[in-house]
Each structure stands twice: as C-alpha cells, then as structure tokens.
Amino acid sequence: MEKQIKNNKPLPWDEVEKAIFKEIEWLRGAIIPSPFEKDFCTNCTLRQIAILMMLGKIKAKDISSTTNSFWGGEKMNIKKPHGATWHFEMMKTIGGHFKSLGFEVKIEPTLAWGRADLGIYKKGTSPLFVEVGTVSLPKLLRNLKTMHEKSTILLVPQEDHVIEFTINETDIKYRQ
Image (spheres, rainbow, N blue to C red):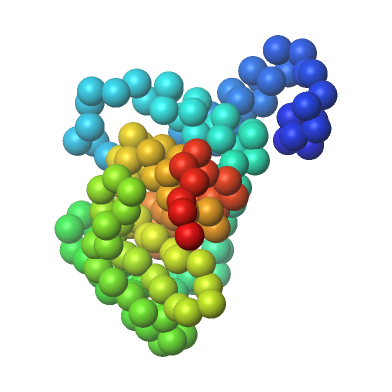
C-alpha cells in the first residue's frame, strides 16, 4: 500500500480507509496514552499518526523480547509496573545501557514540543529520544511531524516491548 501511495497511483478510498484503520488499531494496542490529557480527540490523533506512517513520512517498528530485557540484563523485578519507581528504574536502566555503549545520555532533553524522558546521542548517529511508560499523544504527533529527519522516538511501554518511530520526512525544513 505504501508503495502505491508513493507512486501516486490512485487507490480506492475504501482500501485506504481499511489500511488507516488497521494502523490505528495497532497504535491503540501498542501505545499507552497519558491518562492526564483529556482535551483532544484520541482517534483523530492516532489517525494523523497512521496517515504519516502510510505516507512513509515516519517508519514504525513494534519490537518485543520474550527472553529478557532489551537493556543488557535480566528483567527487573518491580512489583508495581508503571508507577514512579518503575519509571525511574527504567530510565536509569536504559540510560546505563546506552552509556555502556559509549553514548551520551541526557535526562529530559527538549523536543520540538515538550521533553522526552531521555536523549541518547553519539557523534555520527541520529539522535534517539526515549519516552518511558505512558506518552502524550498530541506531543508525540507534533514531534513526529516537526523533528529533524532521521531522528528516532523510542516508546518503552513495557520493559520487554518498544515501539520505534523513525522520522523519514518532516513537514518543517531546517536551514543548514
């Protein structure tokens, strides 16, 4: 479907809507939205993200691990996931993992809109911004539309599950 859209071949509207709906359902099952935001249309926001994916402006990967944590160690044994302790321990674990690989790790770097939990940087590589646990859907959409091309936003809803969004094309062009 993505190839047909990029080649400007007309598609029947019902095929396009089915494909968008499929992506919305995947996003709805993969992302844990922040419970603190109430004044926006969740379905509208997910639809906009799905359209960016369909157009190839962003690439999304859903990655799960069945063996252990992605972060170079055993699974953490925290009794209450998604609480303040879990969030802090996940940030510490993820940051430590990237530091051990020679990356610079910044806590709460500024994004185009808002802040990420972690910023991961290394000369010669694209920046990686990590959101642990829940995420603001409007913030995610705005950043996917406006951040530098080749930036990556990594959502970590669970210790053994990540969603990687790579920005292929942005709506805003920056001067060099």
